[in-house]
Image (cartoon, rainbow over all chains, first blue to last red):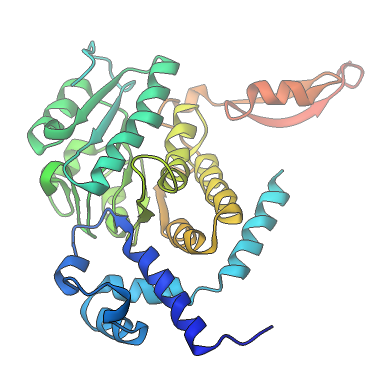
Length: 87
Length: 251
């Protein structure tokens, strides 16, 4: 397993953050526009800053942290196993 | 309301699909693609409350008039409210009038966090209710297809299974499986959100039941023959198989 450099980590975090920001929800609260007006060009924020702000300000920030922290490789393995055991 | 219905007790489906911003635009599209198309295919009567019809006035009116057995919809929500067009509340926890309105019915609601109040609705006499107890995320890129279809396809598996006559338990399991199929094949960033939605699914109520079948219609059968696999394919979901045997064994 190779260790990610800080730059790689940051790039991955930004990519995931952008993906998260492209999500829509069926929740009644519209958080992003209120909390982060115009802050999302790559040069204007650091991942840590965004996390900190999201965590502090919004429930969706907490969700994002949980989604980001998920062991996705393990989840994909479990999903594949469940498919093969059902067929 | 698109289709005029004769008043048919306990056979129709009420579809609620507001459309006024991005999320509901997607919900509106996919409710039609999956639920309404399936109703047409199976000749199940349905009432379509779309766009400006997805308000409390029409919602109450449609239930009183058509007595739907299944209410399925997409709309914004929170732990105590399910909403329609322009966030107008359609169902509110602790509202006893709402409770009386949907008593004895089945519900499937794509709405954030509303699953947190399901225990209360069941306590009020709802037969079965499916939804999400946390925020439901989907990735919206090119409307209406692209990545979003994975999320809506997985969600609607539950409704399609109920319409096909499967029990709530079978419908729930198949929905989990559909989510898993997409998780296994999606890119990592998409899979994360699919895992989140799958783990937010909640159903409460009659696990063995189905809106379109009464208790009397549930059969237990023994498959007889040499090629029971084919027979199984034809009857699965409609009956409970309690055994299999060959003709010789039967004699």
